[in-house]
Every structure is written in C-alpha cells, then in structure tokens.
Image (cartoon, rainbow, N blue to C red; front, side, top):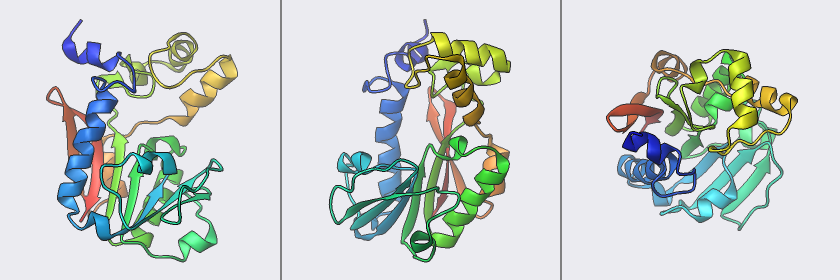
Length: 217
C-alpha cells in the first residue's frame, strides 16, 4: 500500500492522517495570509465552538453558525443555531472582519445552495477563507475510501453501509443514502465561479491537490 493511502486510512484523528496533517498546514497558511487574525471578529459558517477551543491562535471573537444547537463556550466564542445559506436576521445584518468556513460548501445541497452560501460570505465581510475538499483528489475525505466520489450511486451507498474508516457511520440504507445525497464535492472551475474575485489556493498532499481554499485577504 502506498504511503499516502496508508496515512489516509489511519483514522481521521491521527496526526498521520490526511485530515490531521492538513489541519496543521491549513492553520499555518491562514495565519500567514491574515497576520492580524488575533485582532479580528470572525464569523465561522458551519463551524463549532469546540474547534476554536483547540485553535493555535484565537481571534478577538468568533461567532459560529451551525444547524446543530451548540453550546457557547465563552462571550468570545458564541454559537448561533442557523442555516449558513439562510442566515438568522441578526447575523445577516452584522458585519465581520473575516468569514471563515471549513468543509461546509460540499454539504449544503447542490449549486443553488452553494451560491447562497457564497453570496453570504461576500456580503458579511470584505475578507474570507473558504475551504472545501477537492473533487478529484483520489481519496474521498469523508469516508476515506479511494475514488468513492466517482462511483455510481448504489456503489457509494453500499460503501457507506460497509466501510468504517472515515468519520461517517451509517447503519441503515436510508442513512447511507442521505449522506451520499448530501455530500457533493466541487472542482476548481466551480470554486472560481462562486468566488470569482478570490485567489483559489491549492492545498496539496503528496503533490496532489487535496482541497481548495478561496481566499480574499
């Protein structure tokens, strides 16, 4: 087994995993692009307060918007329950220094919803960092199964029911179909369509593009 594939299947929480290595490199790049990050008010679309407790550097304040009802950890890390594509009025009326989003774009449900998310990113701050896994990286990042995203629908459903290496666990056919229906990875041209005035940074692993980040600094 190739080294990159062995690393891919060691588990999503392992420091050797693709996701573990990617998180560290991504933070390094974000802090390089936004040297004043510690002074910012950040809106995190799709994030959780837990993830910010573990961040190597925190901004002045973070507001997370997530469909789940999550607990705010402090006055500086506030959780708001809501849809990032149809924001609560109080959030939509506010302005932030930076809109941050990590691995949300592929989950929102197709082109129309992705465009709504992108429109909200543009409306709420002059600067943004929006990351999403790349469709043509050889390992699908949610199931950690090689080439799964290119397989027929039924094959993906069956893999979801039987494969247990990634962070998605489905026990029934309906659950597996829901996950397969929800997750829709995007390519470079699509990313540039949603963020035409942004730089698209290619996050790489083993020389291959692993994820795309739309950056406006």
